[in-house]
Image (cartoon, rainbow, N blue to C red; front, top):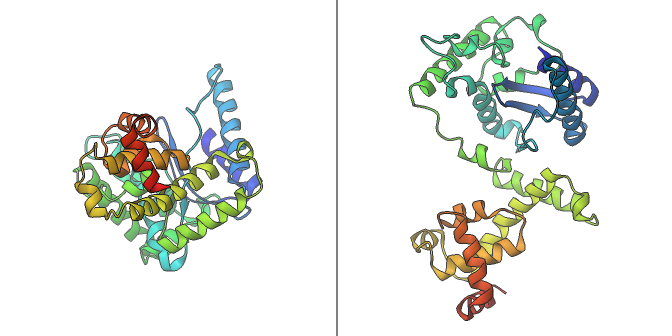
Length: 299
């Protein structure tokens, strides 16, 4: 209740609209719309206030959350509503993935889990908080916000929950878990352009962490394409190369020198195995004649 009460206050203060949420044992998920563009300020207040309240209740001190929250931009336009639907489904399925619902569990059906917005979706409109908007998600499934539509959505989500519990139907979320933006190419480029515009003329230390991360990963993808073109590499050719191929080592060293992304992402995208391979590639590029020659090709 403290979580929802604090979320209610945050939404009223920041003008947020919530489309889905799930509170789990050690984390939470929110599908938020921020009409006033104040995610950073709002999250600072929300997490800080919630931490204070939990600490007071539990008579403890210190941080409640480990590190900064992760934020992703989601394309919610009507013609691309599938992205929005994917995120809402991912959030509502959290209890099923955590094996907290199902036969023999405290909550047999997914919709019985009390700390997600799914139950509010399926209940009476009068019982919903003013900040919870259900129409966009329901319409993405072609359901209406009336008794029959809500029942159909509930049955669909319960069935999805059973699929996930049975080890099926839980795939397809890799981009959501790892990416900085969920949308088509046009939308991603639009977001990157907006991020670059926001970064112009500002010192790096004045940027919000989220904006730096989004800009860095977007720039990484752009530079990866550029670097592959300079080395005359196709996606297929890149995949076929050995982990220790000079082309991969040169790309890894060049990309880490040009962007803000971590070595783990570089190693994963280039198929180099462990991130330590990227650190070794950086030393190879700097200290060996072979490495320096390859770096000259990248400019």
